[in-house]
Amino acid sequence: MLANKTVILGITGSLAAYKAADIASKLTQAGARVEVIMTESATRFIAPLTLRNITGRPVVTDMFELASEFSIEHVALAEAADVVAIAPATASLIARLAAGISDDMLTVTVLATKAPVILAPAMNVNMFENSITQDNLAKLKARGFTIIDPAYGRLASGKIGLGRLADVDKIIGTIKQVLGRGGDLAGKRMVVTAGGTQEPIDPVRHIGNRSSGKMGYAIAEAARDRGATVTLVTAPTSLPEPVGMEVVHIETAAQMKEAVAEATSQADALIMAAAVADYQPKSAAKAKIKKETPSLTLELIRTPDILTEVKGDFLKVGFAAESEDIVANARQKLEKKQLDIIVANDITDADSGFGVDTNKVTLIDRDGKVENLPLLTKREVADRILDRVVELLAKKARR
Ligand code: CTP
Image: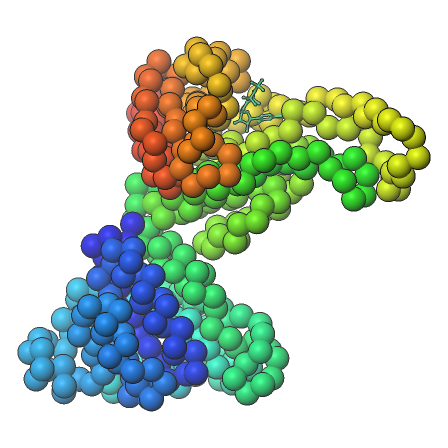
């Protein structure tokens, strides 16, 4: 998604400027061409040479230097940009942008570009909360700028408050989301489920499964990057919260069913990557169960089958974990649950399925098309599934 994209990374003079090195590094590793523009004060916090080595590109620190050293037009970067991200953005930069001032290479570029602009403010809590800064941010937001709210935490001044630069992963995620706006899922609403549900036995224990949530999160992020509006309904996982989508946290199958019903009321597609427990304890004990008896019997009852029971005119994609007769068994499930696509997991392969970063699947659709995919990363599998979703949505639109 970032490959071959030109990202202008603006850096201003804040203590958080050093974090821009991490942002530049992650963007470059993802294949983006990163053009760094630093304000004069930013160069006092981090050396341009650091950014130059990370990005492998010249770093712009001054308009006149640029014109002479690289002999390009001062608006060339503005025109080449797919996105402009300024991280960290100081109160002073925000004020100058809001006032339409262009007095250095960074403000000139923002004013001259047609690309989307993202600002990640970082400053002292009082400066951030000051109504002048808030008014300036509101003005920029109204003009279409994307603002990544700063985080709460310890600030350079030693104070605790709002003003820390947002997490680097959040900034990268927002850049991807903004770049994906024109993607092939633009305007589509997708609901994705992920993780393994937890069915309570008592207040401290539950029945769970080994699902890591990685496949569902990869699908939700891939859909976001292709322009979809995404709702991720997730059971507990140890994965970081993805940005640029609505995330609904649930624990049990029954809660997931409710959240899915609500989220799909306007959806174009539902992708059920979650490992939903098939059984739950008949009733959860109110108090912690004591080990008083030599044995304990739990009575289990079936959970609702979410895919079968959810109603609505949207594409339904299910997963099937299979160890034998993969295609035949998955086809049966597709018929039984009235799905449009089923993704059959080969769980006999150690590199495939639960916990790992790779997956080997077969995609089967209602028209009988069977596609055996090789071992791929979960992100690649996600994009292959979404390719089929895009195809089927287009087909449905023609009917
Ligand atoms: N699913 C669901 N609600 C459930 C159980 C599963 O919506 N209560 C969804 C899963 O998210 C997945 C698909 O249905 O997309 C898997 O179907 P299931 O019949 O549970 O598959 P297996 O677990 O492979 O079934 P079985 O154990 O019967 O082989």
